[in-house]
Amino acid sequence: MNPSTVNSEASIEGMAAHARATSDPVKSLIYRVLELFEQECVRYCLLRDADRLDRRTGDIDLLVDRNDLARLERVLEPLGFV
Image (cartoon, rainbow, N blue to C red; front, side, top):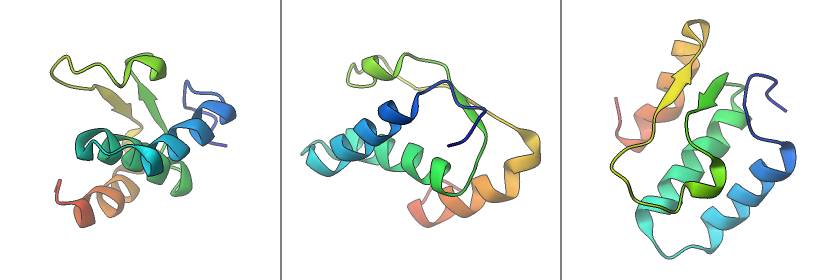
């Protein structure tokens, strides 16, 4: 478990399951990115309650440890974000 995240391990597992189950491509992508952050040990802080990710309010803010920028790019580049 990534110690810098604000989510509990159960929340991460729940988000991964939700990513596989949702038919909404945007939600699926959000959950997939967070799951990959965990797998690649990208230290981050989600600035929104994980239970509110389903609400579309414009954007989702993340703080990422500057020491993890290379890992962050490795996660986001294949998804078309970099």
